[in-house]
Image (tube, rainbow, N blue to C red; front, side):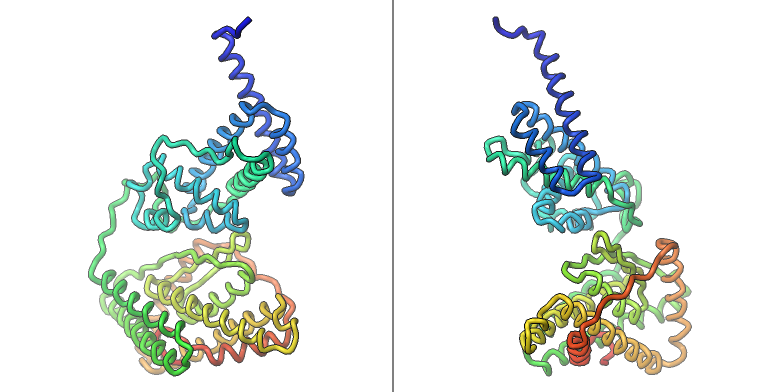
Length: 414
């Protein structure tokens, strides 16, 4: 006897209840366990449950991921930040990219979001999704092992989203889109963007050349441009008694040695009147400073990190033994490089103050006070990081490389 039509809703509800219970079990397991026990639970379910139940679990899991992602946006996260945090695992990072794109299409973010969000979505590759298109990450035609792997990766992404801590927003949240007036780009902002593009070009040439004299020429010109602009803005604000603008920006640090790279960022930031804090669990640093100083710090940090990475590789290859290419050597190299760069930048900063005279001191102090006040508002409770083991050869090689580095410190030749 065939199944009655009236029996189908009851059967579908039973399948949904079974899938929901299964997803709850998986979620509890991934919240308190390592990956291996979760994978065992998933494998057992995929092999023993009906395809309908497995497909329903997938739909419920995607819905829960989308809901968690929406909460992350309201907690101050942005697309680029989320994908970076998820990319500790390459596969989980790719799933995060797709989830962001699907949710952006469903919410209309591509049309409604501020330009900075749309730029992030474009960089992550949001194309190919439209409202109403359903994401089906688990291919039922794929092998059992592939399905198990995908489900496990998605559960790890769910754990990440569930555990995200709120961030201080750097722009309007999705619930605020359209409620705030769109800022217009004035001539000052346009001029700064044009200047930064010129500086980026000069630094790219400095990083790309194998000739130190050429690199020094390019960086010296970039220095000049940045100093002139930063000082001009500080003086103009002082003369007009303008309120000091303070910006926040998140800098994503790549593994390995993200915490040591953060030391280099901090050295550059402090010399350029910015404050910075590292969120260790996500390898994300937050810069706080005037818009000009934040732009300058990020540019200089990026350039110096490229130079440091190249010099570290060269030092390792020149070393007598394999230890010179070890993790301890490289970590020590970067730490010494950051320490010495900080010393050089502070020397350059003192030289800047002397060059422009005592009149500049109260203007820069006024900006420093505004930056400190905003930084302490955002991060009232901070703790210092711990120490690390240092390899002497790596330390000495790092200091030597820092002495050779081409520096753009607020536009002053060091």
